[in-house]
Image 1 (cartoon, helix red, strand yellow):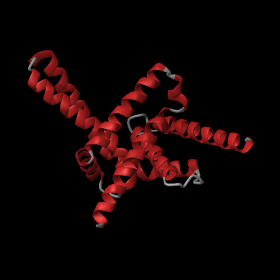
Image 2 (cartoon, helix red, strand yellow):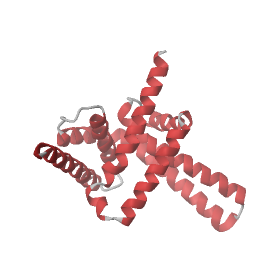
Image 3 (cartoon, one colour):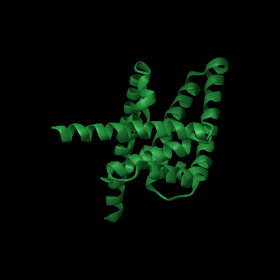
Image 4 (cartoon, helix red, strand yellow):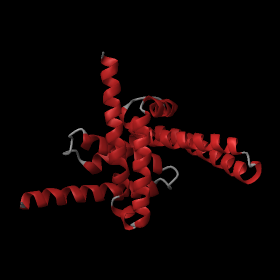
Length: 200
């Protein structure tokens, strides 16, 4: 019983440390240039854990991934931010000035696809070795290849956002891993399915 308690305590410590590193390295990059490499590092650690590599050095692996992915993840990240700003402006103009229901509906659908692409971006980035912009195309295609999993990811994401907004202290201790774990878990399942299909 004491061993189980120690093991759970150790995992709780790792999760809290991972979240604090995610926040700290995001701030280290001035938020804009820190968010994407820090989140890639978070997902990379989560991928290792999900694949049974629980004994990795969390701090070393996180820092190594952060440094190694800094340029590539930020190139893709700036494109993602640019598209997000463009869609936000279009949505605002549509709502404020156009008043066309069909146009607004199309923009909302595009925003939904954009959100799913961003959520799939991080599992894709840590799983494949590609050029920066190829990750975006792959992530976009993933939303259509596995639509049910895409919907599940979006539902889980919204649920966690609601939970964190109700209990904001979770942001400091658990928010990053809470978001990364289910998204990476679903991403792993999708990747394994695709790999088995390609092997046939």
